Length: 148
Image (cartoon, rainbow, N blue to C red; front, side, top):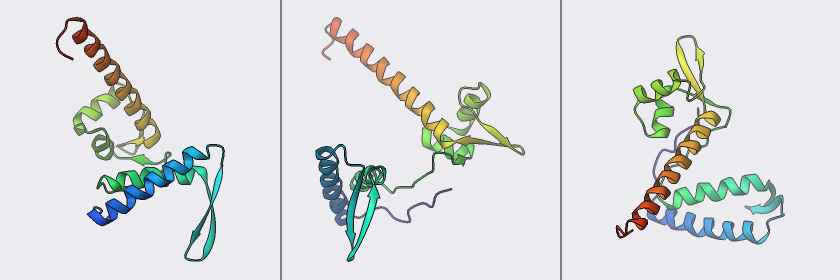
């Protein structure tokens, strides 16, 4: 599993991360067809793929919000507790989802393991359903002139 960041970013680091994320976002938008970038680090030239720059922008954005960040490979498997934490649900609720075959899992001995990629697909679907339901409620509230 990924190593956890030891501390949250302080205000100075968060400000630096915010400025860097903003500038990197501008560069990625300004040059959408670029598939790599040259970066100078301590006098050394590095060539980074665009995917790494996009990931770096996302990491900086999280740091700017004061969040610690972990990187998880999409093929990584996690425990039920780790998956429940990501979904912000209880472990028993997650196990119910697994038993109902809502989220695929494998058994390693007697322990359930969930692939990160499949967990995130479920989370994306759940988030889309929630957003759609909220949009529908907003539409209904407007139709009934409830002040929304």
